[in-house]
Image (cartoon, rainbow, N blue to C red):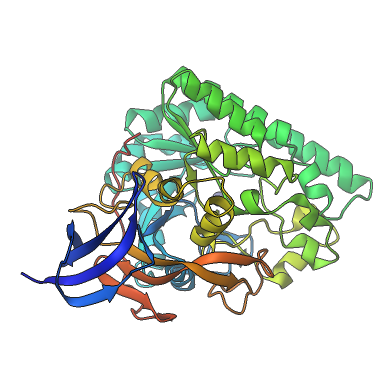
Length: 455
Ligand SMILES: [Zn+2]
């Protein structure tokens, strides 16, 4: 019996290995992997890689900061993701103080459901105003928010006592705590010292958020997680100091996990010394570090000290970044990479010899799906969602904001030539990007109710 769709003769890349076969799709699922499969539609993929749709577990679309919001909304952001081969994202719910967690989830879904072109999930943020609401954590988990964001920085930050309460509540419901680890007291002191002495340019941004103190904060939250007995996932690891804390904990058998992002793997802090607004664009937190850190991060991925690469995609326009030129601490933080991530990790990771092909798929697709409770995502196997990418490893990608679909109007990867690009993106059995065009409309994606992530 013919399949609805067959991808013929591609090199299938999974986290387990690489082999040539046809992939048969029936309805929304992968129905067969074999030879000489026949379909109503057949797509030739000889010489191409066939990978699972990529999974980006850390994005901020239309995220409000004061009177502005990150530039990509749930439509333009998921569209850019789809062009780059990403078929699942996880964004955030940030409750208002007066809202219940479920009300906040409903209003975030109301922003997203009609706009997304790929599937999406949501993390629940627990700030100080949520400490009295910790009895609602179980309801949020049951509604599909199975992971909980805890900050050690910004107004969202929890002190150690609040952190203890939040970690305990999340652990007791089987949720996964995810953390932004930085030492806020040290950061605010260094910013005050720099700005007070006229050191106001973005050059001082990474120097106000030292790698050593990111490591210190990661070590502290890992100690708290161990005391509570919970799992923990550390967001946006930017440096070897933090890798060391995670690796040591894992060697002791603790269920501690970490991710890094393309900006830490491919870029370095000399970008902050570019003139004018160009130096403000790379402001994000943790900051982009000295070049030596890149090798530490690639090595951490290849040795499974870090398990995933996500983007922390959260761009602002040049005009919004410009507002902080007289005081770097006022520059809205966040950089884009939702579209280039999968290619960037292939190009700078696999082609440069840091990662194998299966490791590329593992850190961009398979392990993030597993850790974040998406049992039908991130893998090419019978029964999984037919979320697939046909990836041309030889295509050269000259990165420019003009060729990307992100809406910030700038990219830190401008001028780079990256190797490999998705030729086609498929989401639950439906081709969504083909011949450089998005061929589905807004609202094609679905909210994913996530459950317990397997470690
Ligand atoms: Zn983030």
